[in-house]
Amino acid sequence: MRKIKRKEFLKKAAIAGAGIFSIPVVVKESHGKETKKTAIPKVIKRSNKCLLERMERELYNALEKPLNKRHWVMVIDLKKCTGCNACTIACKSENKLPLGVIYRIVIEEEIGRYPNVSKRFTPRPCMHCDIPLCVPVCPVGATKKREDGIVTIDYERCMGCRYCMVACPYNARTFDFGEFYTKDKGFFGIMEYENIPTYEYNQNWERQKGKSPVGNARKCHYCLHRIERGLLTVCVTTCMGRATYFGDVNDDNSLVAELVSSPNVMRLKEEVGTNPQVFYLM
Image (cartoon, rainbow, N blue to C red; front, top):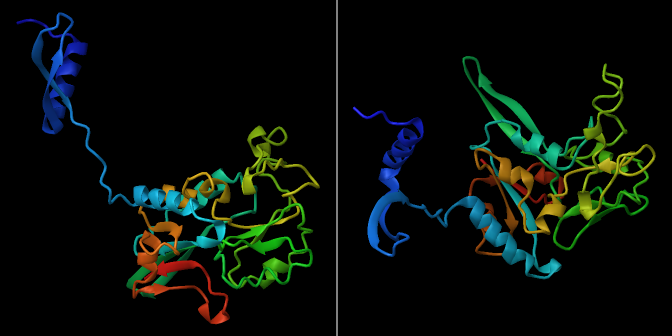
């Protein structure tokens, strides 16, 4: 019996395994003769119904419109959220957030009475309210609401008074005290990765004492630096349960426009009158 080399065995095993998804092809060999060769794996087209693909396509369409003709909203399906905190970690990584600064927390609630107890997880980014209470209280006009609905902070104007943090009914703002994870914790000084500049609001911000964003109020900005380049927010792309959706609600055919018209939609603290633009599916 002829011994089969390992490389040849693996090749045959791969071909056999791909047989279910394979189709016969005819190729021309070097001598020009047409012959049937071993089938190659068939490339399976991703469905047009893929949520990420659809949201990306709608994002491109929205960016072609003037700023005041699009309105960004986020929809979070609480039934799909598993409390994995992937969105929180991805947000910290994307925005190089320091110690004590979190843009998107996941609130964990225990519901029911023993032994019939369950948990509910509620991701809480900035609500990007239509009537943001944080805007009028800022004494230097550092907090503004853009025409597309995103509430931003001008780090160069912010004086760190924290009035906006007190005014926000959702506790969605944090303050950058200039802390580091590795300083005075048994390491040799501050680790290099903690000084990597963040690219928030389409500008490089180096982390230095006495310079923005150190000493500023900070919050979720819907990954503005990403969406203006045709990329979805990082919390959407990293959600393993596909519980978070993002898009232009002014587009009647968009996924978010469909979801916000569902009968099981609710928003946090609607009685405050801020008209939050983060919607939750119950």
